[in-house]
Length: 103
Figure 1 (cartoon, rainbow, N blue to C red):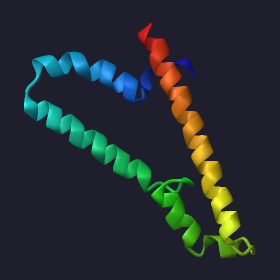
Figure 2 (cartoon, helix red, strand yellow):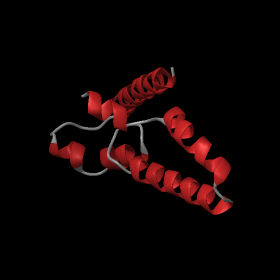
Figure 3 (cartoon, rainbow, N blue to C red):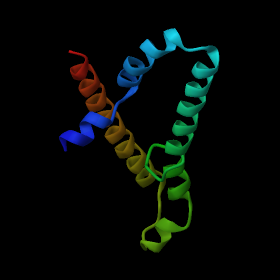
C-alpha cells in the first residue's frame, strides 16, 4: 500500500513535480504536459463511474433494466449523488496525501 501512495499524486503533487522542470523547459514541454493532463482527464471522465459522464451514459443504457428494477429519476439521482460523494472524498484524501508529502 505504501508503494502505491508513493507513486500516485493529485494536482498538488503534479504541480510539485512539474514546477521545477517548467522553469528550465520550453513552451513545447508545457503544452505537451497540458495536453497529456487533458487527455488523462478525458479518459477518466468516460469511465462508467457515477457522477461522471461515463456513469451517466451507463445508467441511461439498458443495464438497469437487466436488474429488473425501473430506473426512476429519484434512484438515478441517488446513484449520481453517491458517486459524487465518493469522488469528493477521494479528492480530499489525495489532496491531504499530496500536502503531507510536501512537509
